[in-house]
Amino acid sequence: VLYDVGQMEKAEELYLTLLEKESNELDRGVYFSCLGLIKYRMSDYKQAVEYHEQAIAIREKVLSPTDVRLATSYNNIGLVYKNMGEYSQ
Image 1 (cartoon, rainbow, N blue to C red):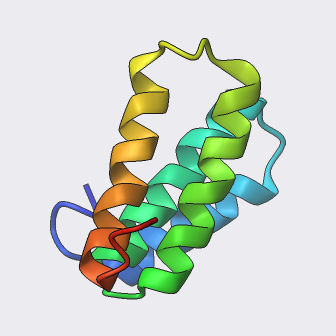
Image 2: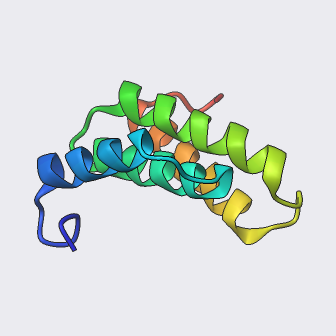
């Protein structure tokens, strides 16, 4: 909801807090992915890439290679690279 209403800083704070709490790997992948989306929306592309890379690393370990959530992670990082003009990435 915070993301949807444009409260990026509060949304970021929430997900960083969730990362500090004990959670399973799949949840951590979701949190990193959400942080990547937040940073993307804030135009902090370098940090967005870092968060999306962390999400992908986790999801590659715990999900099937054909899982749609993994494909979504690749799409998200691709959009960041596109906006950075780094098309080869």
